[in-house]
Length: 193
Image 1 (cartoon, rainbow, N blue to C red):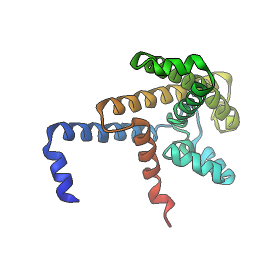
Image 2: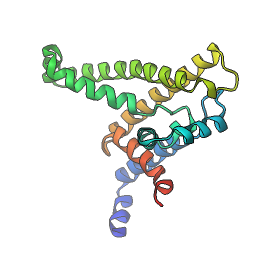
Image 3: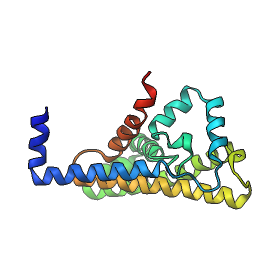
């Protein structure tokens, strides 16, 4: 196994791709530590521990703990994954989308653009739901703080979505899958007893 890793790092192109992947994961992990402006972290940790359940833990695992910390990446890549699934299902149901998919590269670009637009819409919807749910966790609760928190989380989702697409472009694999994998691995140490 170590010989295989040594061989991978000998090839310049693979070394560049792997270092890029590690750098992107590092950026994501830093973003998972930066709290949303105005959130009282101690209150939210206490709220999370008293309301924790399987659904919260599952979602927190996908976000790499950023949901529990209420970080700028609290929504993470989940709106993008959800919109990808919805668009795939709609492609089967709507003939125009099915035709677009068969149009080759140009059609796939349009479908990809629709997926991104739906991701942003879902991020606003999910972010608004999270802000409403934890509105008492804000230090100075008012509409301005809620709106800043919402736009911060949506911006975090857009940034992670962009990073996922960049990871896919460099050719190692699916960027969104790598982000989810890295997030799950980040919580592995705390989940194993």
